[in-house]
Image (cartoon, rainbow, N blue to C red; front, side, top):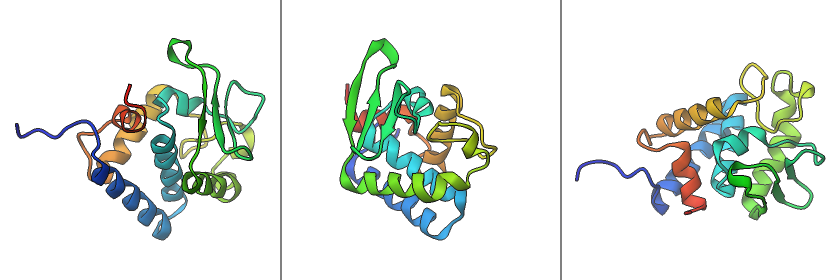
Length: 156
């Protein structure tokens, strides 16, 4: 067939997670943000639009409850709702991100969104989709998309 599958294999996903972790360990602030973002997408299976909407404020419909170790989704496509538990390793990455990395992102104190662009603004669903696709391409997976990450974790 000659074309690369849009779905991730287990070995490809392990390679992606290793690559973003290694870049974060030796890179700068944005590399640490990117690591948390890829881990979040992988661990939750959330749509790009849901990731863009996640808040650190528990009063918001879509938020991370870092103490409980879950993502709460109350507003999503097709009125799907749910609670997504985080595994220990992902929770460790996201706790560190919230505690150490996010406060250093430009204008982080002006919004409750979990992930912000380089200029400190919240992501739109479209820019989150583009950001994830760009990260996948940068780390050696140009045929993969934000939806590929979702389907690795949430096959439906």
